[in-house]
Amino acid sequence: MRHGRYALGFAALTLALTACSAPGDGPPAGTLPQQAPVTVGEPTDLIGVWTVRGAEVESGTILRLADDGLTVFGRCQQLIGEWRADEVGLFVAHVNGASGAADGRCGPPGPPGTPGWLTRAGNYQVQGDVRVLLDDAGAEVARLSPGARPTVPPDTDPAWTAPPVVTDQARAWLAPSTPLPAALPPVTRDALVGRWLPVVDPGRRPTPAHVVLTDDGAWRGSDGCNGLSGRWVAGPDGALLAIAGPQTLIGCDAVPVGQWLQTARRAGLDGDVLVLLDAKGAETGRLRRDG
Image (cartoon, rainbow, N blue to C red):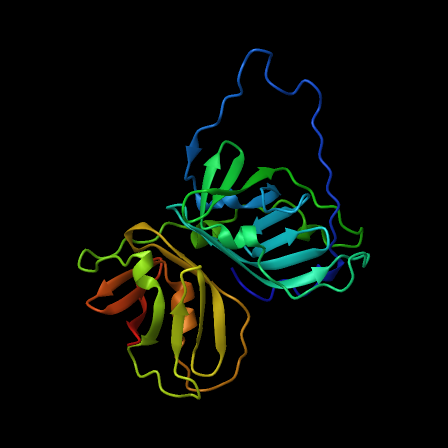
């Protein structure tokens, strides 16, 4: 996902969603509804506009996932951010901007933050036409039903709410990643937690370049001049996805540790060194544990 494509038209968005079911849509008396088979599916299966339901989800919430980012349409705020998913069922999302309701009924918008249910989501499954978001333990967090249509002011660009199309660009961005080389053992999620420094001299520019991955799926760090933060998730065979939020752009002789992490799709260990590789298997960076 890419930042900077939400500057125009977003503040005008607002939400009013209603849904109903026609009588007689259920199964015949004396029969049980059949559950669709559950599969991992493809990451592109997540692209769409979804009604979100779950124990922690505000009623009427809509989630739009497209190749240029995500939008969460809520009663009082519309949140924008980034998301990623892969072929093994990993999912990660991070909110980096917000706008208040257009009619001002909820007062000024609060600071942007990723909703709890979206923060907890670390995996996805496909069940018929429904998408299921799960936490790291496999517990259901939310169910995404297709066909949602946010209602917005008439002067809003229809592209903001239209069902997104699965483009060639999206297919390439979400394509399966190259497996780790046989000589590079995959790193586990638990082993990733901690503070990491670049193998190259982190320097003091004025802060040593570093990355801290925490057990709750957040990460933070510095390239030496600019603070960095985001979300991360890891899976089998060294699978790794990470997203970054906005950052300052102070110039210095920086070490792009955040870019290394964001472009990584696999992670392995070369002795005590963490090796990050992109979707094509090219190395993006090397980190060593601090201490």
